[in-house]
Image: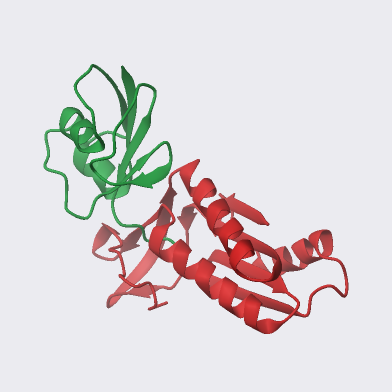
Length: 76
Length: 147
């Protein structure tokens, strides 16, 4: 199973990378993808997306998914 | 319904005029509601010298297209245009343009306000400011009604 993981803005700087690929059967949910990809505790206000749609932390992940983590948005 | 992520400075007034000429039939619209967001040179008591806007290529466009479609379903509007800058910005640079055309003002006002609030609260953009104290990520402003 391959999952693409992306981090944006302040989370990218905290985690120390913009993206990576996970190749294992070690993550069933978005929260588990975070645990596999980083050594950090997930900040409470982290927003999450699977395949570019907002999801919650318990959302399941599947082979080929793109999972993104980012802080509250500040556009406009 | 057009969504554009722009990497270069833009003139929102010319953009509205060009869009109107290209996409709207003369005489069809009675109301055009615009919101233009411009970069300030101050924030939270500090002088802001410059800013960088980051986005999530793909998801940001997709999100803005989704809310544009939702606005078209919810209100009786003829067209909408959302333009948003990314990359390096300087004070006085336009950041965002939301324009809505409709037959009557209520739908144009309501849809443009809703689009702007959705954009502020959920569209994946992040601002990093350069102040005299150094660089900092802008914190979420909560309800997004401050500016």
